Length: 319
Image 1: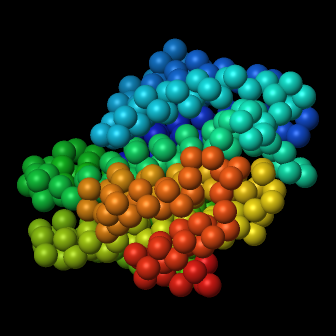
Image 2: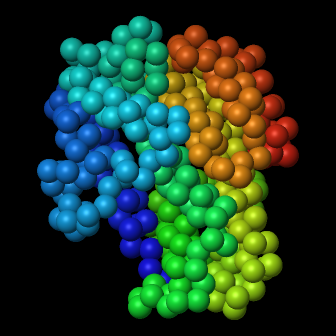
């Protein structure tokens, strides 16, 4: 198995988010460089602390699904992070971008309360990792499964491995949950409610074995389980974050943080070419959250929870 490029792109996102989080302090923090973040997104000018990433020849930007203009949106969000300085000179509130604080927790948010780190992280998780993996799954039969590529197997085996790599779990998952990243971490968080860990890992393993055995029927059955389970993980976490926002509805920092996570998952649904949820339903969910997180209502949060639960046959009480 070789899914080096998937793992390296996950590592790139980790460095981006870790850099942003250096400003998530309740005390004064150094200004961040939006240009540096843009360079990390495009992997230019050696901005990563890991020299292997700088020299990898790959990037996040050119793997971003741009159907919805996400590349430009992410570039703008990354640049905007650089406008935040310290909590004393840039305190965020309704209509004012800045650092919003609750107790020991602090977040960088735009004027409408959307947290930069979450919007950027979920944008890349959806528009790069999820999009690439789901596109591979949809087109898996188009990859050659005859010619062996040294160190990779056939093109079809390698493509399947790359999709697995974007999920962010070790090969021993779910027995081994050390070092879970992004989607893998969220899968593990949702597991107690939807049994996602074993379901998706078994499907990845069965699909890979089926490809090696030239069993296209079993491959496609496993593919369908991977696609459905991955989408359901996003739905389950969406409900969890909307519930947390409702619980903290009077706390600007915690409410907006949780809703930024939720909006990231809603937008992420778009990047699955075989999605269950419709575009109209995605827009309906986004409408319930609204464009200003400071003015969201409990009723609309309940509407978002109930609609998501209905679409994906989930019980909100277990999430």
